[in-house]
Length: 594
Ligand code: ZN
Ligand code: ZN
Image 1 (cartoon, rainbow, N blue to C red):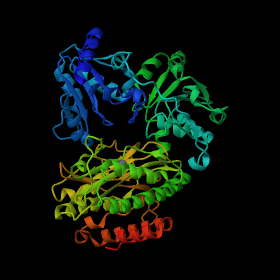
Image 2: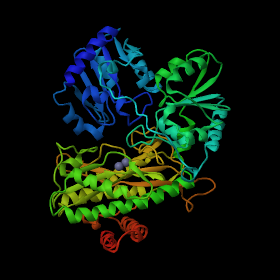
Image 3: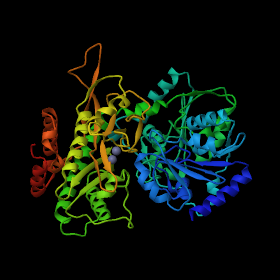
Image 4: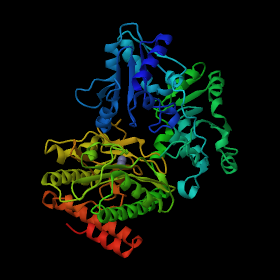
């Protein structure tokens, strides 16, 4: 029982002398997707979403999560005694403010410094200090003490990603990172961000479901590097790949290494967003600390030509699976027996047949009717429903391929849609096209572009509670910074080579959900660029039909119709050759001119 776990946690809080305890969503690597052994917030609260922090006081408990999870969290927290606090709404109560209002002056909020980033730790510390309260670090994790049957960490093997997929050698990446370190006068750069480590080393792992990363820390110096990893994960090929460039030490030696380093006069670059507070605390001593976003994050977000070709190739494979899936739905839904789960399973089977497929890039969101309105709905046997020849079905899914990562959402009418559904779908499409065809001066961030995707919805007094786009890794994490297209974005300017999603939506609780998501890449706008002002634009990478039965062509401008027709012509041209004649004819019908 969840309430028993919270009661037991309160006993440990008493022992430690803290009046509140924070259990963030994250682990020591500040990952979004965690290995099972570190899903502490899920174990404590029962909430399974990918984002959400829990705070427990002596008589209350609260969970803070964002718009993607409001409906799911409400459902999963029922009878847990934990109150849901919705983030990102105009009247949202911030977690820090809630803590400050619940604690009295001089009281303490306990937290494991490993699961808090340096940035969150200093923000929280400041807020509490202003109110006369204390952020108290407890080195042992209190949830771990209670979670007696906690799974052990994964020991999955690590593989070398050949340069014909990554497009750049390990040596070249190390030297580009070192150049950035030099520019800031840094002699050491330490990162615990798993996707940054995988990208730098041209290696991929199996430690976390959906994310091809491996649990490790990486320290780079001016002439070498140290990888902290369970050595059992490395085979002869991996060891040879790292030889003379990066030394391997065991994961558990990282603490001792920080201690050694704390005695040295070095300047260490730490990314406050992705470095845990524990690392910073262990380094306290002689080193100077330079706090800035890791140079790897920016280098990784600009995809090279080989990576971009990989994205394009994998999106052909992915598009073929999607079209075959639509055909299967069209043929099987009327017969009955297709459910949200069996549909998701079928889609996975179709993807598996694709070249270079490794696994899914996240849990397939397969939501029929009202379930489509739950933004990150993951059907379970208890919630599973049969798809019928009526209503709207939303499917958001993606694959990990050795040459790319995909993420696509399509919404389709399984029967005749209502005028309201057509109206809303077309507004979402107008927003999608607005981004896809946008041309903007270099220097603008996704934060500034986000509103274009919402304009047609705002015109009808509607909105959606999530960002319009996120960066995506190359055979790496499906969510990748530093840039995005969202009002909550840090405002990082977009650069040519950034790959992002374009995914506006609309959700009507208990009735239906609409989202149209393609991957896009930022490219230089040759026509508009001048020596004084470079212009950028997006190029759509994803190849998959958009359901025309939900489109009101009269609501589209001439330019929007042109975009849609050209997009569908491209989809047909790229996918037709890979399809059997019957599926090809089906695709032709789906991509007809409007
Ligand atoms: Zn998606
Ligand atoms: Zn997405």
